[in-house]
Image (cartoon, rainbow, N blue to C red; front, side, top):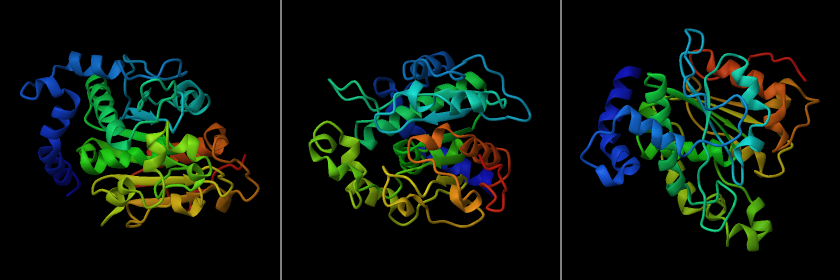
Length: 289
């Protein structure tokens, strides 16, 4: 059934993805070299342990892992710990940089509807480079929410096995409204991440998870950026979705929104989610650090 769902999704969305990634050649099928070249244009510079385009998959790590940063999340800084930690565990790690606005030096600032096609282009290149048909996505903050647009509206569900969101803005955050001169003039993504925005209404309407994809959200109660933290949780069937609150297993863990991607506790949960069938097991007992 899962394979059938992926095939159907792929057939329905393939034309849309091709048109998005290669708007000027809508009737041509891009070569592997073209797909890889387009993806390399989006790779985040300086991310340790990531973007080795000759990385070889293994039976233990059969899918490449794509890291998706958050708002203003310069790649090397966002993934200063997690990327290398996951690479050391045998993953082929890739990291993109998306969502630039003219005159703004920070990534992750464009509207979600502009950023998600860039993720689609990057995933297609990673798949071409690694010779497989599925990736796993691990995203932080906006990067844990934006890929859901790709999964739902751009055919990504046919190309993704696991979606792991770390402190994801799945239902928005009131944080951006504290600084309207920042949030609503130079950050279109901040508008999209306001609770009740048109983007979030569209994204969450009817369902919050896509058939054929396993979802794990990793949350800290001490998040000061995506607030309230309970809004990070997704709704969906238990066989497909696990919402992890770090303090449930490790009550004395005090990481907040930025530090959550710099702790081995998060690495343990990510690795656990990606190496089993289905999402993370709520009964998993990590080593508290």
